[in-house]
Length: 183
Figure: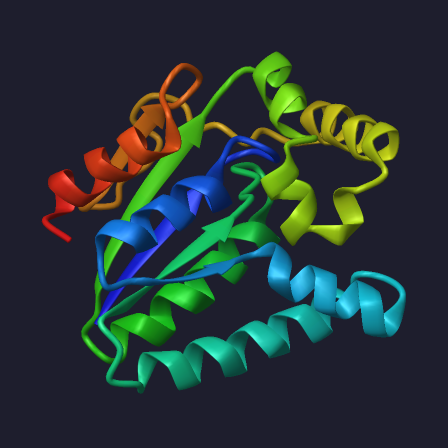
């Protein structure tokens, strides 16, 4: 079992890179927004406890499967302990089955992420982002309230890479990940 965790700020390209990585590996993709969209649609808001419980069930069941592995995308605020707790809960589930765990941090400027925030692929898979003005405002506001990019040396994961994908096509980034970790 393999787990590839793609980290990065909103609209950095995690889902799109994940989709490309699926095409060249046997991995499946679960982008983090799937859970949020489900909760938004059925509960009318994002409820942290419900989301965490849902994630736990999904990851526990997946980790026990015979699948090759999973790509999971997450928007991690490096300064918020709850985000780290959530990530560590996922890691612990996969460690229990001796999974190989890889971490990829994607970075791009806010200007580039705002451009990416209204791409057809993003809007197709993330209904809550379809109000472009509101989504852009949320992205900008989130950037003022949290730090979504690690500082040099801050990440101590053994199998980790950081990629500035500002000027790289998603398929190129996916190939870099596949080659680095022999996926």
